Length: 364
Image (cartoon, rainbow, N blue to C red):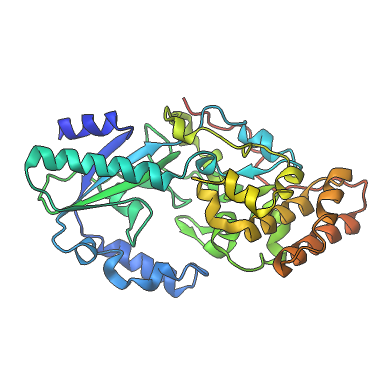
């Protein structure tokens, strides 16, 4: 296992552990979450039945799961809370500023699995990274890589939570690691910081209120009552991680793949709103943002422009798309313009967020 961990480190993974495949308690909690319809439009969460929580049903013969993490905090990014306070600039979740993590992790997981095969002579395996019905966080917890925090993200005592997860399903009875225990204690900073109160109870997230869901997964109109709470977040949300005390131990990514590119880190809302579809496709090539499509990109920015401080640039941007060919875009533009009219041109937009909290843990 030491040689495996060392090779994983050379490939850019920050930690590795081995999990068993009994996730019966997590299966029960998943079903409760689905029964409460907290997955919203994410029908894929229920589509594969028990395969998500039973690895051997997804990949017959699976006996163990090798779980890995890869740090992604981009050291060259803008200070996030300062960016959230600038209502005329766009905030994009830190994981999406660089290359699509699916591509980065999948290729390196494949190389790790091929190295294992060369060492062992034979190995049946499949690699995954947020790409199939896999309970990634419970598997990582069982592999000793961290615990699932009250915000439902995985937290590691030595690395915080700014990392991606990946898995290799294998047909070998490898020795398993001890599962991680929780260390959230009485802390509730993530719950209090959530702009839309999507963390409805400790360890329970209602995706229908989550800004990441609203700006990425949702395919129709964003609920009107939640639009003012989104602020300038146009792709995802990091607030619950930004306030987590454990992220003072987070590590900056050394991989060039995750460095910000194409002006996506703190670009002005007006300039991003001006992108026509060919430019959007060109600038988001190889990025996780491309999955949005141009229509929802404009939808999200229209909401952020409606929350921005009133000014000539914001007004011009919104007016430029009042007659957009797409009704979804036009409706969100109308809403945004009404926000500025209703509060008067001299009134700044208020961006609800976690900005009043005193400190932000800084990755090392």
